[in-house]
Every structure is written in C-alpha cells, then in structure tokens.
Length: 311
Image (cartoon, rainbow, N blue to C red; front, side, top):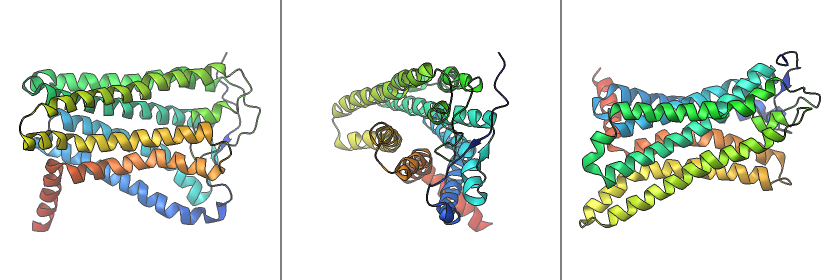
C-alpha cells in the first residue's frame, strides 16, 4: 500500500478571533525569532572561535544551541507566513515532516540537558577523572546517541500519518504541525498513535528529568562534603546556568501538558499561546542564561566588541 499523497492540504490556524490583528502580532513574534537566531548563532560562533571554550561543557552547550536554532527554523516559516501573508495551506508531506522535526528535536533537547547534567556530575564528583572520562570522542558518541534517540523514536508514530486517510476537517489548531493535531483528523484506527507517545514521553522526558534530579542530589551531597565555603559556592555556581535551562524547559513542558490534559474548558487562545511559549521561550532564554552566568562566554562577548571598536 502506497502513501496517501493525494490527500488535501491541511489548513494552519493562527490566533482564532484575532485574525485582523495578525500583522501586529507578527511584530513581537518576528523580534523573538530574530533574537533566538542571533542569540544561539552567536553562542555557536563563540564556541567555535574561542579555543578556551573547546571543552565538553561547551560542546554540549553548542549542541543545545544548534537544537534550539533548528527547532526555531522549523516553525518560523509557517508561523511568520501565516501571520504576515495569511498563508494557511500546507501539504501533507511538509506537515508530517515538520511534525517529525518538532517532536524529535524536543526529545533531543531533553537528552542534551541530561548530558549536560552528566558533565556537571563528573566534573564535581570525580574531577580527577574528568578529562579521561569525557574525551572529545566520548562527547561525540553521547551527542550521536542523543540525536539517534530523538529521531529514531519518532518514526513509529509519524510514518503511519502518510498512510492514514483524512476525511474529517483539515483544519489544524496551530500555525505549525503537531502529531497530536494531525492524528485526530485521520479516519483510521489511531490507538497506536495515542498510546505510543505516552510511553515515549515517560521513557524520555520523565526519565531524563528523574536522572537529572538524581544527578543533582549526588552533586549536592558531594558539594556539602567540601570543607571550604568558597569552594562550595564556586562548585554550585557552575551548575546555576544548567539548572536554570532545565527549569525553563521542563516547566514549559509541564505547563503545556497540563493545558492539553486538564484545560478542556480553557479558551483556545490559551492552548495556542502556551504552545508558542513552549517552542520559543527555552530557545530565547538559553543564550541569555549562559551569557549572563558564564564568565568565559562573557569574556568572548567583551573580546568581540573590543575587536569591533578597535576596527
């Protein structure tokens, strides 16, 4: 049986009831998108250009920035196309591919945050073995595993979308394609597509969050055993940026989950707004957090501006 390539195009939705204001709404959205692209692009440039940042911690940060950059570029064309030009139509193939990248990259980001927690755990709990455990080769292997977990785990629920017949309304509830949106429009048995994501979330987001929590319990236990108060403060300070990014990511995940599960009577605009917060707030905040809290990146920023001022 061949994929259902003749299915009618899907229709994206912006902010229901606020269509006349879409041009005005596009201004803050465009500003946030540009900020995300500049912030994460600048982080990647600093990590590539500055030799002092060629360490496992910053390699993981580069992976996080690249993931945020990619998920932003995945949603930006359809969101801005709808807000600027009311371009609502999207072909089934493009829609399924967008959903695949959006969900895969969310799992990748969760995996990177877990990898960064592992980096902090090794650095604080076994500092003498840090360089022998987290070699460049090992960092590459961890990155590859995280990437493969994200992209391979999403194939089972996404691939059936290509074969499903769609005889219900073709109107989606967001300005981008999500698996849970598309599957509801299918005239087929979607039991697998309902159950699999729940199991996947438990084995990725929930398990990652649990392992991050356990790693910080062990880190805290080690830090409390350090005699010097200054050394304790210094060790904990190295974790502040990562903890902030973890909280930003998982609080938005939990918020979106609660809205979807228990917000049936909430206005649709609340659901839509929360989904934008989930996809834009972490990529927007992560570069800011690391720029404010990481001295090495602050030095790179100062060096960049001093070179330009001399030029």
